[in-house]
Length: 449
Image 1: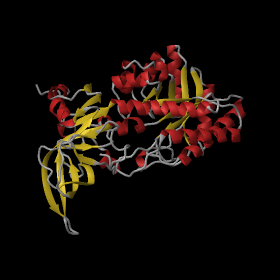
Image 2: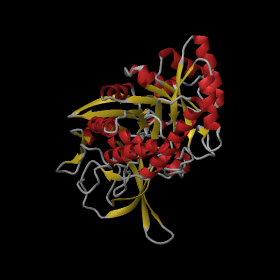
Image 3: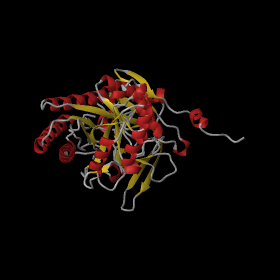
Image 4: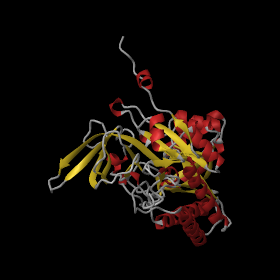
């Protein structure tokens, strides 16, 4: 593993003399025996150190400029009540995008004041619950939501603290489905068309709303700080325009996130220490350029906290060799999960690194494709990877950088049960989310009379 970039595999992952992986001081073969496969394994030490690194680096970089910057963990990446408790203990807030995520965050002891509720189509029930518990921010995404939230807040006798989500027109990130600040998509209110400024006017005038500031999110898997710099300039420009019109300096600006992680050896990742310094510098330049007071800033690192800290363990089933039209052959390695526990490959063309996890092999490498057990030819976990030619039924396979968006996007396609999530640290394993059982599945089914 010394040949692998540290960003791809969890920080505590190592190999023993027999070639077997250990994470958090526990042999993966023991984890598979006790908890079964497929299995999501989270390196608690790594995940929490990444969370603290973002809080520390961004806090210090902005403090040097006389400003503040809070960090919010992205619950959509991976969430359980215990993870919410970790984030609370490590000084982060949490952003949620549904009523279910909100309840998990609260169950983990996250103070409601440190929770931000996102979503482009929040239900009345979700907005009402957020008002009742007193979340710190509700990010409004449309003119309709401003009207609805104003009415709900008035009916409850509450004041809703809001941020207006702005689409800045800065395009960043990888796949088009995760680039979230171009004009032709579902999120936010357009800066270029004037819709964002119109929403600020409406929110400022609406009863029951406390307009705290503006929010943007420009995409995911972003490697260039230039995109954040341009986005910050546009956001602060909007803030200055609103101040010039109303005399109100909005007190908060959320710059979003989308920091890239490495999924495969040699891939780049955005270093939080570097990003913090450069983004703080860019913000300072933007504040100087547009004038006005300094707002309080916040960021949302997204997958950069959970992603590199997790792996998925699979058991190998069928191995077959298929000839290629251009010559040679491909080794197909079928595992006991697939697109139901990691749909990102089929959805986004995502790439991953796979390794034989339970033993050493001296066999020659073979061009391989790791596939699942679903009734879909597109059920691919890793499209192209070199694996030992002697890989066989019963071997353990580990997939790197699956701490984010595996369990949270998992499904019961083909009525397959969703895997457990286990945290490991200092030789101890604890279950964060238990494995689904057949009883769980059947209890949702309404049997015929």
